[in-house]
Image (cartoon, rainbow, N blue to C red; front, side, top):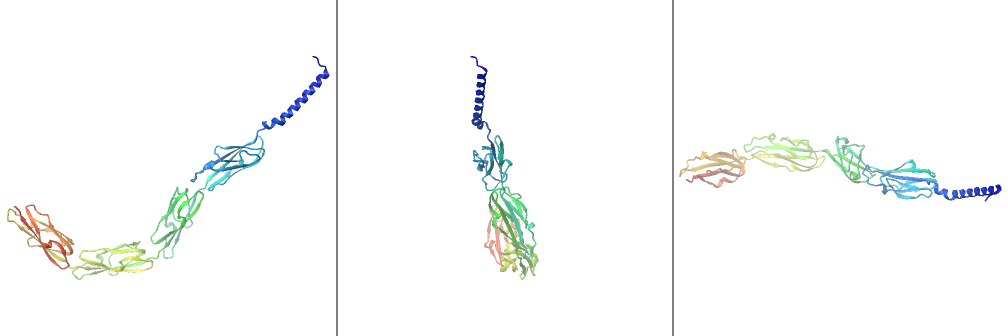
Length: 399
């Protein structure tokens, strides 16, 4: 079929109009699909370098924008992709106690079609904070300073955990958990601890421990040594050594003195005693032990009276009526008692006179198998001051 020129022109015009109409329809319906929507990837990063234990998923994130999807979600270290329309947007996170939040620049602004942005939210755990203050009161003559006291902190990774005291305070970083602050005290100071010197500390928490040391007024203790020599004794007061137990006495041992020795001592229980000498009885006055208060003055008198010794005559009698040939001197005598003048010696038919102080005594020997032995009544008994007793040990040969 042949078309004339006019017909062809009409048909071309119709085709052109149809093509234009179809392009407009495509633009109207297909273009929204082809356009790339804005995307925002939100990362939640958690730093636990101070004892924290939270994870990214423990943080709630909200995106404010035009039709965000999703608008609310749990944080993720690998990121969460959010789509939205061309609009202003802002990413926020629900604050969690003890974590510091910081946002990257991409967490707010305007986002356009085909644009992709990244938002990073960083959550850093806040270390607990412990401040330790050392306060010293010197109103009773004390001279110590805060730095004279050593402070110690027991706890979860406490840094520093030992240091000198400071009136201004010392900052201690510590992980969450139980802790205790203590010190090695100095003599003459009473310590007191504030309520926050021990307990539990949590992430992001700040506590202050104050240790106060107040100087204690000193007391005076006069120690007098009195010696009585009316039974032949020759010891002097300086032959006795005095000992003082108590709260940091200025001297805790020294020779006795009739005029007395003054000892400064801090408040508390005390006790005065001595290394006694044989042949002397001892008596202590009431103030030689007890409790002494700050500023108090007490006098302790220890009196030693020489004791009249006793006499013990030890006789060794040997009977040789069979084949025995030993003599008294072949046997060794032993004496146990209160400071005897000799505690072993050779036997004697005439007897050995031993001076001994009052108390229980016991005379014995290492026997000979050829001889039987027998003891008189005064070989194992008590002896009094000035008393004289005789012990006789008889050995009779058996074969």
